[in-house]
Amino acid sequence: MTDAGRTTVPGAPAAAPGQLPAASPWRGAAGRLAVRSVAVLGVAAVGWLVMGLLVRLSLVTLSLIAALLLTALAVPLTSRLRRIGAPPALAAAAAVLSLVAVLGGVGTLVWFRTSSRLTDLTPALAAGIDRVRGWLVTGPLGLDPERVAGLRDRLVARLAETTPSPVAGAEMALTALGAMVLVLFVVFFLVKDGGGMWAWVVERVPGRQRERTDGAGRQAWSTLSSYVLGVVTVAAIDALLIGLGLFVLGVPLWLSLTLLTFFGAFVPYFGALLSGAAAVLVTLVTDGPRDAVIILVVVLVVQQLEGNVLQPLIMRRAVHLHPVVTLLVITAGTLLFGIAGAVVAVPITAVAHHVLEYLRTHPPASPGDPPADPPDTATPPSEPGTARPIATGVHE
Image 1 (tube, rainbow, N blue to C red):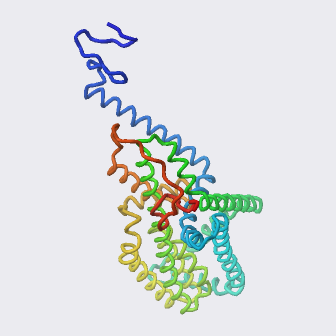
Image 2 (cartoon, helix red, strand yellow):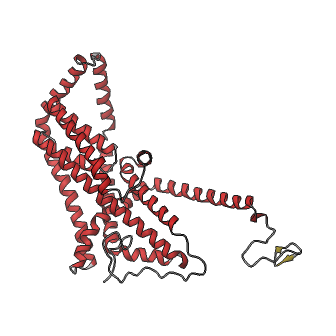
């Protein structure tokens, strides 16, 4: 028999509206497995499409991620200014200008220090390179001189190939400038109106999922804030200790190598390895083997301090990832977005891990529970990163 377009089995109880009939093939184990398989395939297809779109719009994607990371740095300053009565727009503008001053000042200092020393360093670098080449030929390795010369020529040729032409360099500079402007623009409005933006998003979530969504967002922002502040602290300590060793030994490019150590700490494992190798190699070609060995010891001691003391104490709340997972996501991020992908891979994975763990431990509300109210943006936040995902946009 049929009832309003539904087929029923004689003698079987009628299905409630919106439910499958009792004799439906979808009620069995095979039916449930099929439904779940289709759902998983649908989610995977949507994820693949979204990932492809993010890769195609890499400039916008990386700019948004960079803006979120910088917002996490700007939140403490903005919160202090808001507590002393500064208007939201003024506090946000002060935070953005502080970021511009720090980043621009560091870049300008490095440029002038490096460019002023390059002329004096040219003879020392040439002598150091010749010394290394002689050690490769006459030292324990005993390499063939022609092979060493061929390796040097290939390295120089590869560097020449990677150097952009003037037109390409100008295009890269304009692209980088546009990305910086976009990042600062987004940071300003996230710091100023972030709380209102998040409330707008949560209000459009179904009532029974509202509290769960808001909690997942809080967890995401807390994880991101803890990661950014923690990695900046670890990077500053690493750069301070290694930079102090370079300065004491009088290495000519000690400031540039110190900053390289600082920024290298944002890429776990690989960054510390590359920045430490650069410090040792520059010391070798400028100051000789003795000072290079000293810097090597300093780098190894600092990296052991970071891995066994600083990371467990500072970063344990933000990152709960196995080293294998960390290496895999850094490799994937590098393949997708280059160096920028390597920098953002770990925080994105850490945020995703904590959000999924929160959703796993906080099941959806039952149908009988009343809908949750939208997040209140009229109350001031507590400490940054603990009240709302971006809690600096509250209006007191």
